[in-house]
Image (cartoon, rainbow, N blue to C red; front, side, top):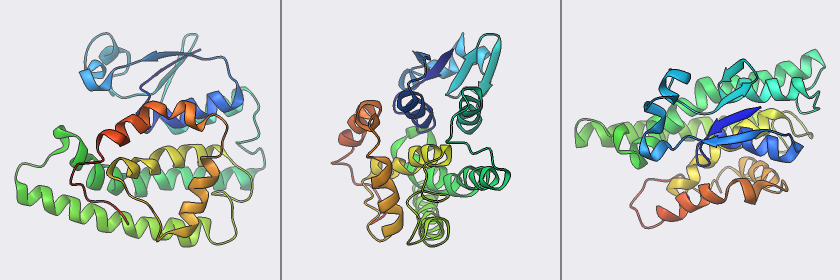
Length: 225
């Protein structure tokens, strides 16, 4: 198997972390997002979405981080994707919530416009309003995550056992660290994040990502605090 990825990609990092933690034999090929390799051949034809990650397993190809995590857990019969129908449904539910609700506002409305030039809006006024709107919506979703999904008693997103939903969610939410958010007003979210950062391969997999975080420390960015 081969994973096409970039080490700072928010959607590549969950898959890379899961592969590393479970000791799976998967080769990696870097698609350099910062030079636009995902928009160039041969990758642009390989994945017309022009996004990473992509998993290649023989003649089978799979895009989308969430789907790749499910596939790997199924292929290797791993416990992080429960067999029990209701437990699995809850894992699917929170992964869909991150994709459909949280990340849309958090990434594309709030953080990406601040850190990636191609997400800048046509006018300064439109750009500022986009970030303002995205931040307000992101804080609302974080409150839902803090109060409803995690709450005061759960250690992880669906209970006291880590699942692929946790791998997926932590990759997305740590995007906020690029603008130096600290999440202290969402204590349940912070506790869950800290739990995930105790994984043995966390530092190794996220070394390049935290280089990106360090590179933005002196920029005047809007953050959640």
